[in-house]
Length: 116
Length: 107
Image 1: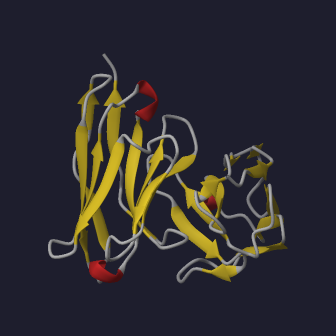
Image 2 (image 1 turned 60 degrees about the horizontal axis):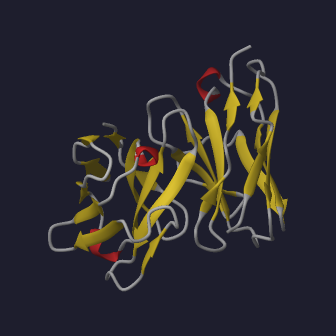
């Protein structure tokens, strides 16, 4: 079964840091472009970051560039998102997602809350 | 960035109705458009890509059309399980952007 499972999110104070992880199974992770997509409470979807199969191409939304870092470990079939300098507006459900252009596999999501 | 605008924002159709959702881009997409369905508390699900190609396992009552800047998602005969929020997404250029969503609510 193709599956993406995000690590538990959490409550973080503004200015704090958090790392999200995603474990992939059931498909060839090492040849797949991976993404993080988020959804603020009651809002729509926002693409956050993507990383190519060999980590050679990385892209970020303007809203997180310089604060978030995406990385992957193909040997461990895992995807990470390091989030620094967190803001209230980063509060959202974060989805790990597969797809070079459109997303054909989504994780169930993990909730990140930034609040004092 | 390419702006994506969906209309309407919400709709209250009845089971069996034909439903059309529009998505307009701020510039041409060359059919680089996908549609997703999202139910409350769940991850989105891919319905169509390349504007009109049905993802495997998606019922044939879902179809997509359009070109250039204007695209539509059509549900030919609405079923109870289709009440959800639908999003379009362009992948013509980064950052890949989504529409704001169209919520189908039970009348």
